[in-house]
Image (cartoon, rainbow, N blue to C red; front, side, top):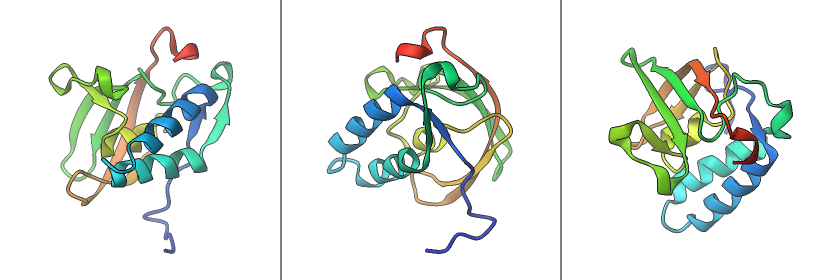
Length: 139
């Protein structure tokens, strides 16, 4: 598959310990959630991996609150990106094992990504703001 300028994915950066944990999580869910697992593994594979103290504050990490715009409908949402056991959509906590969650990890404020939604339709998501959790270094 060739990527053109519209579908080229922006660079992503991940915390080393989170990338390891997310790899294990994605691999453990390959049979149950093959599409999301594959998307997350692709993002981890292409990410620049750094220690937590070298990750800029405007990068989406686990437990961060992220404000993003769905460019398709203009809807702005603020969510917290969490591990599956902590997910609660009514409280604004979305799992990393959702298409949106896997698409947000590692992006920076101002970046956009074209990403499939639950139904497989391509959506452009743009990061507006990132607020880090106070304890992100060890998550």
